[in-house]
Image (tube, rainbow, N blue to C red; front, side):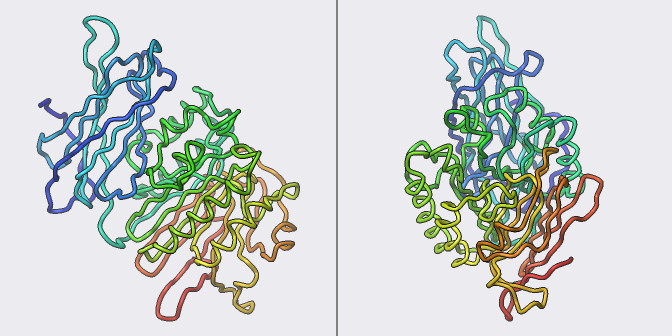
Length: 432
């Protein structure tokens, strides 16, 4: 057993020690990293139960073998190692995934990635130790970040927004991405920029992600599944939805990911594709044991761009979102900031309302004109709208209260509201 270097102090650590670790290795192709970085693009991807299991994906340059080494971050040297097999054929780099199960809830773990290069006499190399904390049991308080389209000019213009969010909310345990993480679906350099923007946070917090239309180019990006495998509990419709529709439960919140790319993924039969997810969403929300629900997908139910409308999507999904009174619907695509509600959910002009809150945001620098027509034409009302505004969103959940705040990279508040669920029912109130 290798001796670990000094480790940072754990975050939350329960009294329980690590349970039995069972690690299942998976692998899939992706282009190689640089020779200077034998292991990179390390990412935490959520399982259905992030309290007892964790999926890690990574890229190993020129690796013939690669492995995950993981153990409790409690000062002991106990770790478990799993070897994987690259699937890149003659290609010198591969992306791997491993899922550690049998973990203890509310417990800090340390892990690192190792690789053995191709060729006789290649030596084993290991990356730095990283840490993460499993989800607690039950509805414990936590925070998460939400990013709209990052997409363009990542290093210079989008990364400052991402880093501002990470610095403002260092305790965030999840990041939700509503699609168009990059601009060109299979660009290795753009994915490198995306990972650089998040730095160590790509491998210390779970990333709940849905693809946008820019993750499609004659089909879903070949890089998506290896990096974002999903929780494996989505609708049964074959590979075209694999890894792009799923749900994960985190400390009293059910996060549901849908794939809204009906034009790109199912141009010949978009209705069936949307209805398959609609029926699955209805089942997932009906069986939700948690007090809170967050749903994310890329194309908005109500378009903020005056030139756009996602009618088939709205017809298929809006009734289910409303029937189940989803708390937050987090979207992207329209490159502006808009927050609104179905008009019938408003509470007599008091400033408070019930029903789902629909949000569109953009983290990157590409912005579009914004308008209200598609909202009002379809029975909804815009409450806050901003053009030319890049934001990150901080959401804090604590018992019967959810607090939401959208901020710019310089810390200015663009929007804020609070949802309270108590003996008086559910109400959404502007301001913090």
